[in-house]
Amino acid sequence: MLKTRLESDSIGSMMIPASVYYGVQSLRANRNFQITGQQMNDDFLRNLALIKKAAAITNAITGDLDADKANAIEQACDEVIAGKLRKDFILDPVQGGAGTSANMNMNEVIAHRASEILSGDKDKYIVHPNDDVNMGQSTNDTIPTAGKMTVLTLAKPMLAELTRLYKALDKKADEFKDVIKMGRTQLQDAVPMTLGDTFHAYATMVKRAIKRIEDSLDEMKAVNLGGTAIGSCINASDYYVKHVVTVLSKVSDLPLTQANDLFDATSDIDSFVAVSGAIKAGMMAISKMCNDLRLLSSGPRCGLHEINLPAKQNGSSIMPGKVNPVIPEVVNQVAFLVAGHDATIMMAAEAGQMELNAFEPVTFYQLFESITAVTGAIRTLINNCILDLTANKDHCLSLAEHSTGIATALSPKVGYQKAASIAKAALHNGTSVREEAEKTGLFSTAELDSMLDLSKAVGRRTAEARVAVM
Image (cartoon, rainbow, N blue to C red; front, top):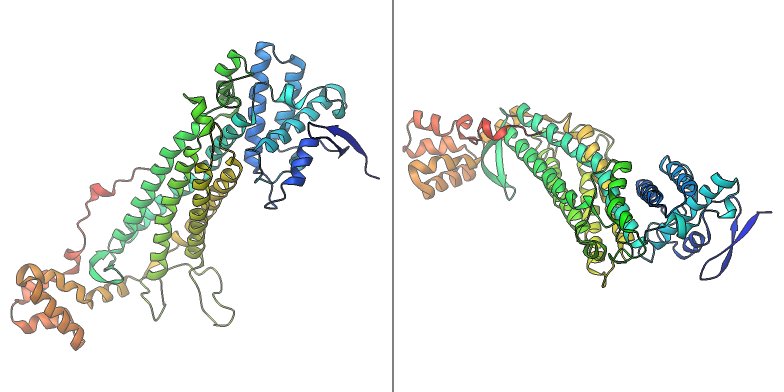
């Protein structure tokens, strides 16, 4: 028969399994919020434990928290940070109450474990979850602070992958600098360029996305810890308010500062909207690039087939030999996911009232998933697509040479209308632009050789414009 213990809160009493470290408020929330079927993010839990550790250290310095209790709390926090007691964090990431349940789940687990460290009996509650572990804190400053710390934590590998993508694309730009192809606008022939120009443009776009995301992450470094319930710092000592963020920055190794306006930092979560928006903007551009890769590799016999994507798996259960662009496709889908999450985050930010936004749980759930998914998508894009992507150089040149788009090069001599008539005649007769231009008698052989030399017609992007910045 399962052994239990009785615990009470302001709502009433509940029987709790005797072996667990969570308490009555955690179990109550577990039963109330069966929403996504997922668990709270591991990095979020580690960062919340770091906050509890920093608070204990700071409160011990002032003498407000007994030294033995503080040491036990720190030890319990270190265990949580190391990944222990994970099974006792039993809550769904989406929960009502602005994250109070998540905060109390952490408080209860640490209090029980610290009590066990001090007495050998976790059920004695020598360390109280509210009075000791939560001293000087509120859900309203610990949860937003943990959220910002987690965004910074998760963003590191994402930015590392985006930087790898930039470098991989820039390398391809150099590899393809002599591959002449036809540029296209609105899916129609435009003017000649090189495949290197195409990939350099992609690299430039990714570099810009990285900068935009990095700029938005600066807002994650200003936290409202110390503001307690609404930013007024009620129930926190002056020393604690002034020093807890410094202690947290040291124990977490994150460059955190206390927000200048704690009321604003407690009531408004637009900084998360900024991060989500920056990630969305980057992923929309990367998704567009993946659309291009799918088009450029289309065929192989009945499409453009200017590039070859690495074959990674069978493309059909019925059509033998079919290979699909599965890696760009999955990146497209992650972009869709990010866009949907961004809409949720915007709505959650707008829905706050007065001195608190109660919708941080869903904001964090969606933003954490966006960052994690982007990291994985960019990693597979690099490793399984970009690195081994190749060009069909001769085919690219052939398409460009037979395009009517090169008639644009004739305009400076004969004008737009005459150049257009030459292009139309080539299309109608199935001939080349050069053949139709020769029929007009308006050009010498030397002039046509010069005007229709595709190596001269490609873009004039300078070497200075290609200086790497990474």
